Amino acid sequence: MKLLRGEVLLLVPVLLTAAGLSRAQVKTSILDVTSSIRSILPSLSRPANHSSIFYAVMFDAGSTGTRIHVYTFIHRDSVELPVLDNEMFYSVKPGLSAYVDSPEMAGHTVRVLLKVAKKTVPRLEWKRTPVCLRATAGLRLLAAEKAQALLDQVQHVFDESPFLVPDDSISIMNGTNEGILAWISVNFLVGHLRPQTNKSVGILDLGGGSTQITFLPKLRKTTESVPVADYIARLDLFNTTMHLYTHSYLGHGLMAARLAALGALGAEGLEWRVFKSSCLPKKFRDEWSFGGLRYQVSGDPDGYGGYKLCYQEVLKVVKGIIHQPYELEDSNVFYAFSYYFDRAVDAGLIDGVHGGMLEVRDFKRRAKEVCNKMTKYPPISPFLCMDLTYITCLLKDGFGFKESTVLQLTKKVNNVESSWALGATLDHFGNLRIH
Image 1 (cartoon, helix red, strand yellow):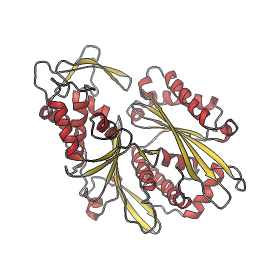
Image 2 (cartoon, one colour):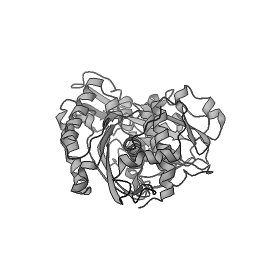
Image 3 (cartoon, helix red, strand yellow):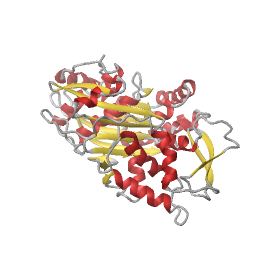
Image 4 (cartoon, one colour):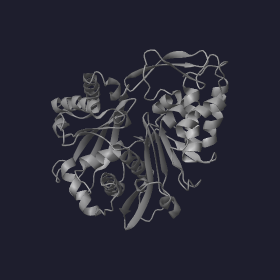
């Protein structure tokens, strides 16, 4: 898949502006498009008069897995801009946070994934191919010293690798950056980031430890009614100012929500306690791990199960915590990915390759079916009832979507992974910061 040269021109300044704004805590900045493009070329490519293919490697260290994106770019001459030619993607489980008590395993994980980069990038290009890792909610949920121990192991592996290791190549990414960069990447890939274009799509990202929502409001009251100012990011682009509604909720990703619904979040005595839930099959009892900790979980053998009781449990996790934007217009199509996509596939709602369009009520309907038939027809995953119910509750009682709101469930957009990674790659390796 090749992106048009003009499309790259539109994407890069927006990515850099958005990322810079979030680091500057949403201060107003204006980026000159032409000078920005010229600034990034030397750091990404060979000499300007030499037609070349060049590469960049981005690691996404999430709470439930670590992913590697190897991007191939083309730079033809001193006039033309880089073109995204290809993406190689691979992932492994669990996430780095699972190795909190054995940090050296985090380094081993990254070392294994680097083999993908070595197979994708020609050997002669290794020393000039930059490599970078951004960690998300899994490490944000850890104590600072434990998270740093994991990152130090990754740094050691990077330093001994044959790839180019830039300054600030490893860090924990701010949750706001996740939402903004994902929004920009998806809107770029669907062709909405163009001058005089008012179209846009919103994004919903559900990870293991956190969840993000980002969209371009149509009503001023949406931006004026936010609880605090950092829900709004201001972007200046093509002589137009855009105010994005964006927020990241740490602790409300799918796996963290399981813990909260079970009453296990921050609990002690894990070696002897059993956490019960009406969202799990009655006869189910097993050990479940997240974030390097093990939990004994089970259904409630002496109580009742089903959708209504399960919904009451997950509602406590959502109610009063997730802000409801003033508007979530039906005309705003939202792209939903990560665990939204995965659980929709598990529930048989969409195709696992192509994704598909769903209404919020489709999650609700399927959650009822799964939860109310757990005894007769145990689901493939014992957590499917809880997960589908949480997604339904998050969308309806959390964000305030109507049941008729349409969601585009996707894993890839134009053959590129739906995530913040492409935006973060251009931001970091572009060697440009806005303050």
